[in-house]
Figure 1 (cartoon, rainbow, N blue to C red):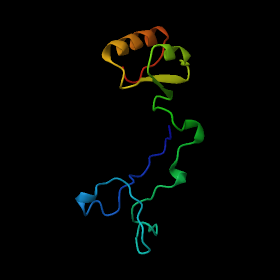
Figure 2 (tube, rainbow, N blue to C red):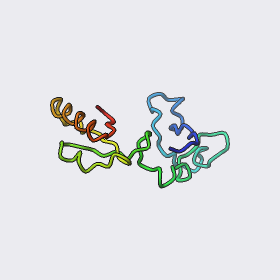
Figure 3 (cartoon, rainbow, N blue to C red):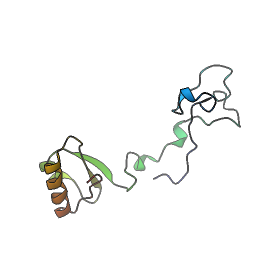
Length: 112
């Protein structure tokens, strides 16, 4: 993934008012220090912080995630580039069968 460390994009004044929460919200207003991008204030997210296009939407392991609902769809997964993520609606019995089949096909399962 992207080797650069990203700044913590926190909501402005969330440290002063805990009820706001830290989830990012874009500051609006012509007197806002963050909106004006003043040097000592919080950083605002923008496209320059994004990962390179060839690394986007990859799992941290480097594989592309493929959501799987049944045994049949395991056959179409490429073991070199894809990793399997079993859907959460799949029950315990079928999940065990899928993990066993994935081992036979040498597939990486992200949530066994």
